[in-house]
Length: 388
Image 1 (cartoon, one colour):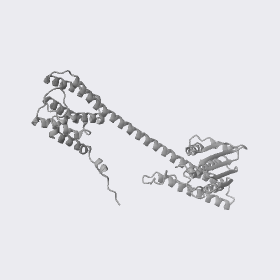
Image 2: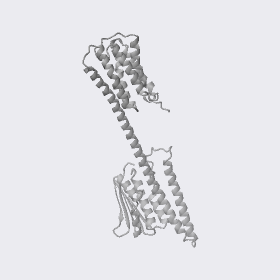
Image 3: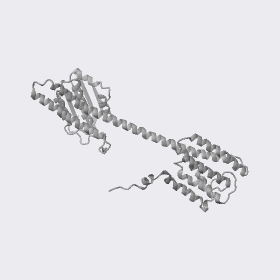
Image 4: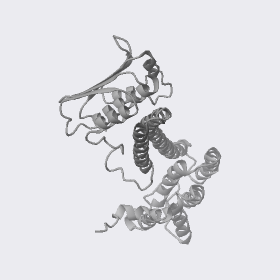
């Protein structure tokens, strides 16, 4: 079923002049209501004059330009000001005079250039109007004219405040969008680092080992098969990450990061073993049904730790212990051998430093450093059920 756009949405699709036209017509109609005639703005003490042909022109100049108050705010303000001056000098005192503050608010809010020059020109034009009204009237003190001018300044200031508020909101939205894009780029960079580095490291180690197995065809065939299998797995994971960058990719499933499948940790361990790393794997407890991002982060902790073990302590005994609790997942990966300590210095922020940030974002604890009996140990406590 195709949903029809709501009335406000359809109304916003019209040109801004069309949307402002009803306001102009409403002012024009209100001006000719008998009950509102001679009930408008009055500056000075000129007596009321009945409407004539010139009154129609003055009213039209004040009302109709409101239709372009946002498209051409300077034109609107100039025409409305001329109509207002004629209205006051002739003594019509029509309700259309209320269009002048609206034109000032619109100019203050929507004028992009020459704002100061426009304000000064308007102020300068107001002075001869006030003098003329004082001479045509009974010569009263200029207090009323000054008070009305201050009211007009307030209208302009209200428009300027609206403009600055709108600009601040636009800057805030732009800043949030840039921060969101930066966070998403960082997340995808970490996913690429975790996935590609692990698979490529395993392939490099397996390929180097194959160089020394030319005299053992059976073992050589198995090693090359492992390289091929690792490459296919790397391509599968890489395609998934590239799909996340596709404009047509649906994000309804959450953050877009694929959760590890059942037995994913065991697959990581088996792949590392096939690369020549002796790994002892222990998994306790049952993974929670709604673990949130905890399962994925635990998977990445094990993956990065095994990758570092292959890089810096190839051939050294490695142990992986994962415990699934009701409220958290604990991971401990230890590797013998002094070379494994090199894995602690990852300046890119996408290795162990990136893991630390992931774990701490979920409210967990992360540590990586030399073990009590030597080697290198990575420990993580990840609260289960944390949102993505």
